[in-house]
Image 1 (cartoon, rainbow, N blue to C red):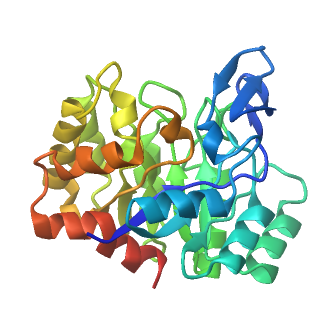
Image 2: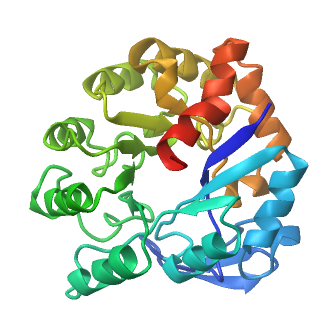
Length: 301
């Protein structure tokens, strides 16, 4: 089966900023918060202080992954130029999303460089309280700030990718998100992690997805397994969340993503793929859509 990974990351070096302050590389694939906490961010065989496109391609080739979408966020640190260079070097393997902080005083100049000069066609906003734009402030997804971002995306013909964090956090605003999206029917939206439901969130997920059943809304299912702690492979709760999503939004709205490289510190790529293939949520034909066809239509058109 051919695979497109619709949610992956490269990083020249870890340079994040989070609710725990700065996040810096300390070698061996490890990172350290300003609180002093050190953890394994990605396997050391993928890199020392960052992960190159070549390291990702090695993983992709070993797992029959034809192409990948390079997204960005505050956790690894903004990687706009590095992502652009990766796509330019390997245009048959990668497409990339740009990102920016709309609170920057010079945001208009940044957007001009990213979308006029570099030519990005996708914009990603990491909005989580842990390591996104709401790590140090809270705002509404249907407020003036994000409306301006979505208006810009509409005017430039950009696909918008959003990570709104986890349930029960101030960033998790499915009602506000639905209200915002309804104002921009011309824009294609992709919501990351299937809204990041946790182990006991079956009812919450169904109710949130029902608000987001719109013709211009898609979901990647990256790291869905990872949010079901303490479950281990093959992640039975993830399988139930996938069945819920299929019944509510339709299988043609779902896209596979690995969220590598960080997820590979906790699970093998093979098990990530197999947990979805063996979930019982999808037929063989539907798996082709989840693993390839939908992402190809949205990101590689």
